[in-house]
Every structure is written in structure tokens, then in C-alpha cells.
Image (cartoon, rainbow, N blue to C red; front, side, top):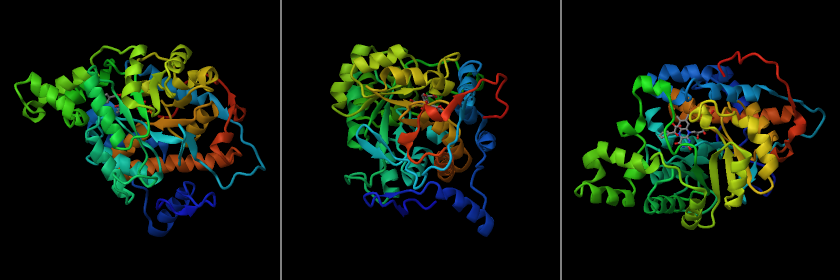
Length: 431
Ligand SMILES: Cc1cc2nc3c(=O)[nH]c(=O)nc-3n(C[C@H](O)[C@H](O)[C@H](O)COP(=O)(O)O)c2cc1C
Ligand SMILES: O=C(O)C(=O)c1ccccc1
């Protein structure tokens, strides 16, 4: 797909023709004999990444916490919902746009915040952000990134022919994910940078204030921060740098990377959770912009989020990477939407592997979804182009599947197109 081609006749705005991607792939294969850079088969994607990546890095991405029960349950939860297609209805032109916090985005799909992307492929965050930009997919920058925020933003904007200082719609859409430092001065600095870099939304991840039990990484001795990976935001932060210098005889972080990494780790993964009341600090520091809490799995916490004045939540179990045995996020999505959907924007992640999965989560009430591992597998297997192929394929699948379901617009998706069926047994495929 060559980016933004189609005029949609709806205010003259250009939007990417996601459904066209399928035709492009057939044409490339038939005319040029070119296969996609990485498999299109969701069942084979993981294996393609495994072959291309170092075992430690692959296992870091692939692994869930504990015995991976929650990670597998996430998939089982999707399998329990089946779609009921409708016939003889208007389904074109398809409209995948969604309005979130007053802004219209091209897709109901967002790139989940994923740390240490340069560990999976040298293209790293710039590659994934560029792939997202070409498709109108908002990129959520992780606090644990391997490239400073400003550099990622500039690369994504440049790929669209925009400069990151130019205002307006041509900028690549981006959000900022916060691992919440203990020190408010550092938090203030990070949020100021996020605002200056044009991040629309603040996503505060609540479920990772402490590490989880990850046997694959323990066996490999793989911990990104201990290797000095995933510190780029902190190390490039003037307030963090000053604090480090004040504690370590005027050293720059580069003079003592191992110690600086530990110092940064103590800020963002201290093991101490903040409290609900502390959200007032974030509100003060972030201003009026949207705040979204990521990692909500209970109606009670969703109610608390509404009470404490945030704008949205991500119903998420962190892809089964934090608390093993936690409920699948899809299982609790409907009850959370029923409880707070009229007050908060409810987003979803954990376990999405196909366009049909996206449809299911949207039909159960999510306003948009985040996807993590599949895109990172694409990145690991084939860099920027691989990440783009996975994202474009997901969007094309969403587009096609909406049509097959008899739906033209994302806003038409609701529970009437779903049936819950429990066949028992286990998931057969590697998905
Ligand atoms: C390798 C990896 C690193 C992650 N790093 C972060 C992170 O830095 N911040 C965050 O909020 N979530 C992080 N997540 C969780 C994702 O944002 C998301 O919740 C999860 O990947 C969704 O599940 P999925 O992989 O099944 O799509 C990470 C996930 C993976 C796989
Ligand atoms: O691995 C994760 O899930 C995650 O959130 C994270 C945390 C720190 C560094 C990199 C990723």
C-alpha cells in the first residue's frame, strides 16, 4: 500500500485505503513474484520472529508471566466469541476512523507502548513509529524506549514530509506512555517533553510499578535495564541528569551507565505504587489534556478512575506479562464498559492477533484497541517494513471483516454481531 491515496469524498480528507493492501499483495506476488517481507499468516508470525531474533530478545517479547496462563487465557477469551455476519447491507465505502478525546484518528488500532524496541531490531522505535505514521496508526511511545522521544517524533514526522515543529494534521499521531517516576520533578520534565513533542494523550501504566515473575527471562538472565537498554528517555532528560550528577560527584550518566541505569530503574520501577490521590499531581502537570490509565481489570478500579477525573482507561493485563492468573482482559471488558462506558473512553488490549479480534473487542464496547506483540514480531523479523506489513495486514483484515460482518463504520459495531460459545478444550493453533 502506498500510503494516503484515496479521497473519501467526506470533506476531501485523504485516508489510507486499507482494504487495498490485500490487492497490492496479490499483485506483487502475481506480477513481480514478490512475497511479503514477513509472513501474512498470523499462525506463523511468531515463528518467523523467533528465527530472526536472538533467543533472549525473542523470549522477552514472547514470554508471559509465570506459567503463561493469562497469556493463553487472553487467546481463549477471543475464541469464545463468534461473529454473526449480516447480508445485503451497505458496507462501502468503509470508514475505520474513530473519534477519541475529541480528535479523529484514521484507525481504531493503536500501537501499544512497547519498551526497548532497538533490542528487537536496529530500526527500533523510529522504525515502528515510521511504519505507524504511513498508515495513520497512533504510536504510543514507551517510557522504556531505546531512542529519545524527540528523535522518534522527528523521524516519524519526517517520513510524512512534515517537521516535528510544524503544527497541524500532517504530523504523525502519537501518544505518550508514562512509567510514573517517584520524583515529581522528573515526572514534570517528562510530561513537558511529551507535550512539546506533540503527544496527544498521556497513558499512565499502572500494572508495572514493580517487576513480575518472568521465568523465561530469569533462565536467560535477561533484564533490559540491567543491560543499559530502555533508558533513553531518562538518560536524555535534563532533570534526571541533574539529579544523577548531584548524587554521583558530578558524573554524567554516560560516565557511569550501570549506576545511572539502576538510578533510573529506581525512579520508574521502584516497587512503590502511587495512590489514587496522586492523580491530582499528574492532572496538574499534564494540564487539560486527556489522561488514560492502562492496566485496569476491575469495575471497582474503573469506577475509581472515573471518580478521580481521568478521561479514559485501557482494559489490559499487559499481554499476560504482569500478573499470571489474572483474568483475560476481554472477559472483563463488557462489564467495565457497562459500568463506566458513558463516563470514560474505554480502550482495550491483550491478545489481539487478527482483524477479527479487533472487531470483537470493538463490538464488546472498546472505542479502540492497542496491539503489541504482532507488530514487534514483524519488526524483529523484517525491521520497519515487517512492522508495517503486520499493521497494514491487520487493518486490511479489519476492513475486510467489517464488510463481511455487514458493517460500514466502526461505530456500528455492537454486541448484536456476537455470540458467546464455549466449546471447551484448548486453543489448537499457536495463536
Ligand atoms: C516486549 C514488550 C514490552 C512492553 N513494554 C511496555 C511498556 O514499556 N509500557 C507499557 O505500558 N506496556 C508495555 N508492554 C505491554 C503492551 O503495551 C500491551 O499491553 C501488550 O503487549 C498487549 O498485549 P499483546 O502483546 O497480546 O497485544 C509491553 C509488551 C511487550 C510484549
Ligand atoms: O516488558 C514489559 O512488559 C514492560 O512493560 C517493560 C518494562 C520495562 C522495560 C521494557 C519493557
